[in-house]
Length: 334
Image 1: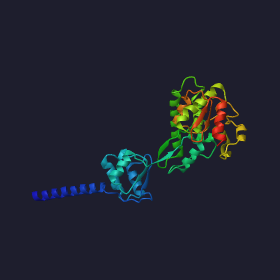
Image 2: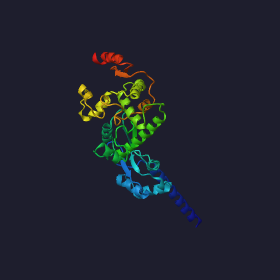
Image 3: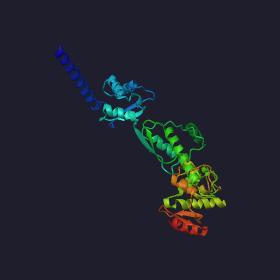
């Protein structure tokens, strides 16, 4: 009897050891799965999916293995309740252990899209349309309708989205990226406004944003940025027209063919700072942080004019006579 019990105990122990060894082998063995041309398998887990449901989604997505075994592993690990919803990518090296680790960490597949300083909102929308695995859910409508769809209070989208590189989960929506960019711009503008110099002829953060967008388009060399801002601030102080080409070009919209002519400068629009005093009604581009700060921390300069030298830098002048000489030297002669 004792020998029989001993043999039975040995058999049970050996069987348990074999099961443990088999389990360890399975946990560290890459899971067979179909891969796309980029070498990954897509899996989308909806919010609220149970651990059993996750196992089912994985098998339905192509993971070759019993659904019950994956579910048993999730339960045995103690992490079944910590699996996070989202869009995931798994490659050929994925094992049951690394798969669960990724799901618990919420390590979603991500992509990136960049909003460039100086872009207008139409260029931003074009970039979002072309972004990889980003669902374009924005209406092809008026600027006001676009902002309404985003749930943003501003009536015009120009200048509202901070230029930066944004990381988003695979299959995210364009509207979610834009809302994030708008929130960042709101924070950056508030930070800049808090650091403003005293006695500026700017009455609100909105005016600072408009001026920053002009500075962004007028600055070819970063070291000139505060000087460009100083010229515009000097003009605003005395009520002199800004006379800046980028605002005229923005007002022309789709009609601008790349060449600014005298008739454009003479044709009145809300954005023509040659025919109208003060700031235009909205920003004309997406300013970066450097331009936001330049708008509220301009250089203390006597310059009232500047002209592009042709190498990215600008020539600054105090008087109209000096400016006209600079124009003849850098523009007319060229």
